[in-house]
Image (cartoon, rainbow, N blue to C red):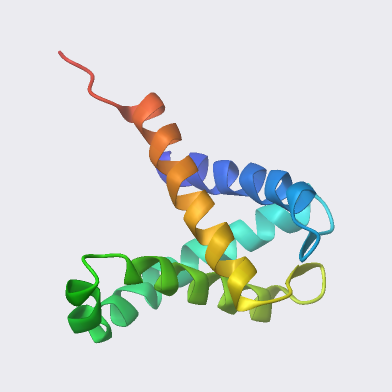
Length: 117
């Protein structure tokens, strides 16, 4: 259930961020939902390998290189989704990755935060 909610949240973030950036284009919510699903699959399959390969530089940058890995994942998503989901440059992908990470951190803390039993 959390995975599906995460995909939907990322879809909403994609649509919202496409309104703020002219270099980021999403055709509609269904395209954003497809892109979010593709991103989730890529994050499950490829992201762990990338993080393992970039572990030394990630340690050296105190984890900040993870934003670059996230931007690479977004660029790979644009490759698999086609023209309906486009990010014009790596700089835009890096900014979107940072904003999405921050927004997901806040949303997850609100939804799934410290619930004392």
